[in-house]
Length: 127
Image (cartoon, rainbow, N blue to C red; front, top):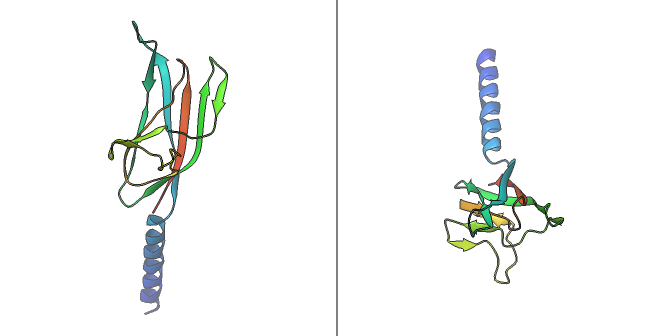
């Protein structure tokens, strides 16, 4: 009887742990974008980073960095850098301000500048 009780308690604790971990925040995740040298009349090529927010989750942006060593440019202010492939639009509000919470879907993150420019977008996934 005592073994059964202990067994049920352990099983219950494991199920509770699994249920709570499914609803937990996960991350951080990072996506990288850059600008490379083009060819011919194209001087620069944007190389976006793509990421997917799974169903049942939202991505919450926690940081953004954009550096262009050719000009000394550095920014940690997110702008119109995220495009929703799923919705076919930039992820901004009605005033053009960036959204920091993204619903499920496929996204493309990019930065501009001269060849050598880089960007990193870091986010967490929340239920």
